[in-house]
Image (cartoon, rainbow, N blue to C red):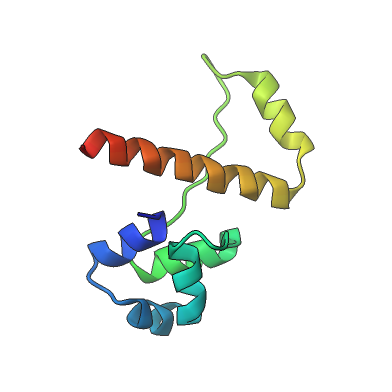
Length: 101
């Protein structure tokens, strides 16, 4: 289950209802939930906000932080960073699904 599908179902919305609340067309939501397309970060944010959730991005620098990883991320374009964030969200989603089993 994708993050969007999880958020939508957790508040009891249909795809159509989410489309009405978010302004994102229902077919686009279906493609996102079936992983046929990756949403832009602003689209993902709109969908999650319509379900009462929000995306929080935080740059942590301090003890135990791999500064070389931060430097590598800073070299990426905003679009590339968004792709990395989406992939990391998917990894987290997979880990949560495995944990529930």
